Length: 86
Image (cartoon, rainbow, N blue to C red):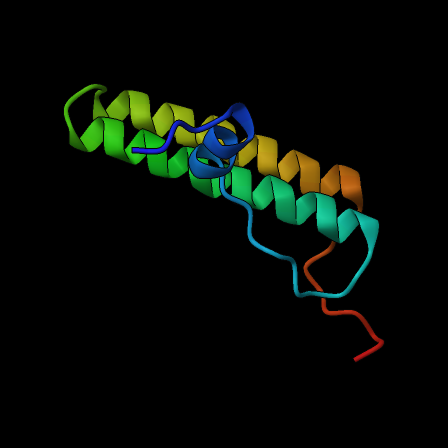
């Protein structure tokens, strides 16, 4: 098996997908935050499923991540309504 350098390990553990939405810096930042949220939720769910953490601990961790994501959305000024440019 090929030895992975640090960048390869980071890309394997924390993959990032390309952003295909409206190009604005705040959208790119939020998309990165959203991908990080999804990745961490996946890890938490797997830990709970394998019995490494309780359902309550998993819920608490995911709730904290959700609050952090909502805060980033608010701070970036991203709203729920579609842009009027469509």
